[in-house]
Length: 339
Image (cartoon, rainbow, N blue to C red; front, side, top):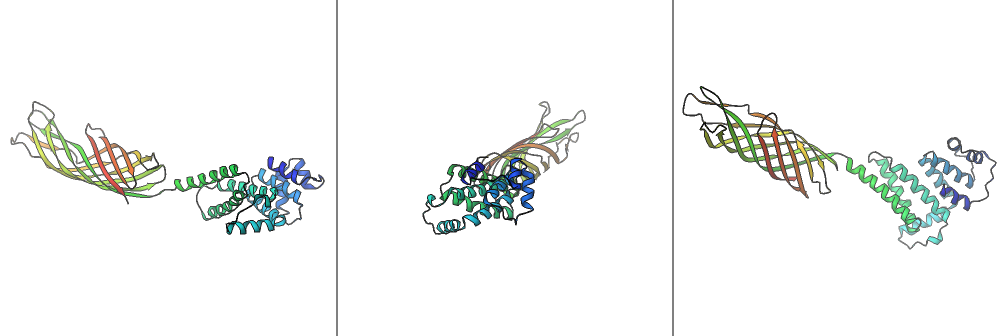
């Protein structure tokens, strides 16, 4: 390992006689790690601690390695460390040449260990925030000492990207209210003495409501609902049968679950809904007693495709769908705002 070679060069003159050196020579890193953790109070030499530090990292015992390197720092570079902290706190100019490279390498190992720890967290927590504060302190020291600046930037980006991911993946409550201009269809039957005729009912109106659910940076799951009101026209689907009405009042509701994929940093999204639509509408019966209008169930189920174009908290949305096992369609254009 490059770090070990650098430190070995700086602290040359190892004596390969003790158990630490023997385990390193035999590449028995797990055994060496256990040996050290069972004998932390032992008075290891600086050279031995450097070897043990490498063994701990190989075993991914990063916290133990941090404690070991802080022990090294306090034992051999305490004055330089305290002076550096004071100069940083006072915003004094830092001269990198005032500090030995071996001290800088210790800081580098510490932030590398913290980076490995931080990127293994699966959610934000007080423990993570504590580790991140220490990571930032040692990272700041390396930046001010101008040591491996490009690598320090890279490791900072790696950690910050992971923390941003942890923040973004958390689901939070999301809600909005909206108003849509909508068109929806219904079906009715004109019954007669000889045969029945289908009637097309096309309504136009508005749907006032909103949605509530949970979302993170990528997905949104919600319940959507609105109050329908408007009017429509009724017309026979058979040109040989004359029946027509206009401005027939209609009201009801549309509600159901939905899911969407957030596709941009502005939180614009596309998705689908599976709503039920309920409409109350009163049709005028024909003058002839031989004919009457039979209304279908006021409840209908449909699937709709949904898109939202977000501008801050305000959004524009479109919705288009088809009734399940029916030929009728639904579409809507609207505006809304998150709360």
